[in-house]
Length: 349
Image (tube, rainbow, N blue to C red; front, side, top):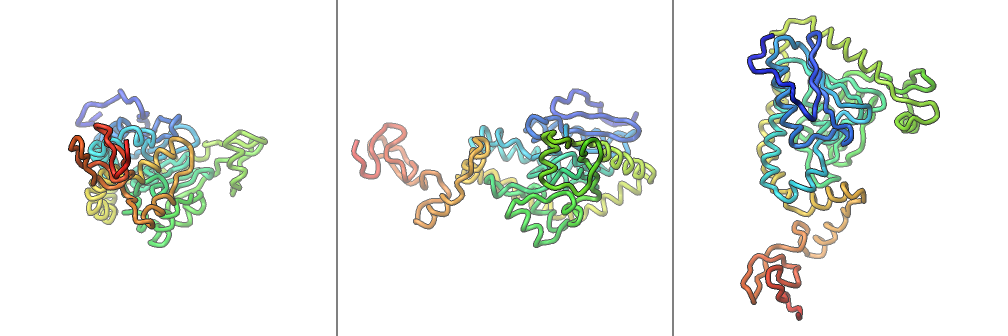
């Protein structure tokens, strides 16, 4: 085996398997719908680099554990608890994310996305970074950024117009609506849809949303079965193995031109802007609403702006100064000094 670097086997949040010229990388956080944490990103980048350097690997299959989610992007609980409180660390996190996405783009080998479940947010961006895609019928793709206080500038804003066209890209990014499997095929987001629902042990196709829900809950004889998905992925792997490696590598490099161009023109700016943005009200409200399982108050910020108040800062711009202790840059809407407790804005103690 020629890998150039030592083979790593101590992954904690992903699974890495190699057999018959195929490396399989699996996000193994089903309890979090295969959302990636900071640690996961570092492991994924290492795994893709390992597969890239291993001459016993011809094709890489990327998937998620279970049958509910391929990947749902970043761990919003981690975002809410950590990065809304320390935006400078989110800049570091985005560096890890960029390295992870680029590890897929730069493998020099075909990467097949095995969509075993929903691919949303950064999960869909991860999917877009892959070369080929096969989706189980019960799965769907989509973006969530504008609904949780973020911007999908980790691949979606750059690449969706290439995949689906300008209008459809804006529709996905601005409405956050789900794109079901067959619609994803029609739009060019995936290469193939395979049956994944069974009724009383028999595969069915063109399942209704109601049937999909029943299958996911195991109700009324419905169930999820990924056998056909694995058969389709394995068949595609075998087809790719039977091609010349150097020609395949350079073909990927050439086809990556527009993806690479859009990515490198924008990701550095996105990294900095998102880091600054994490100090604002939108991610704080959006992500905490997600964690607390409540609707986000989208209208409140519009109402504040319409009333001439600050919609960017939670308690107004940092414009007040305490006459008693001299503390500066207190939020404009504070009634009392947070340091000495003195009344501000004319309020009596």
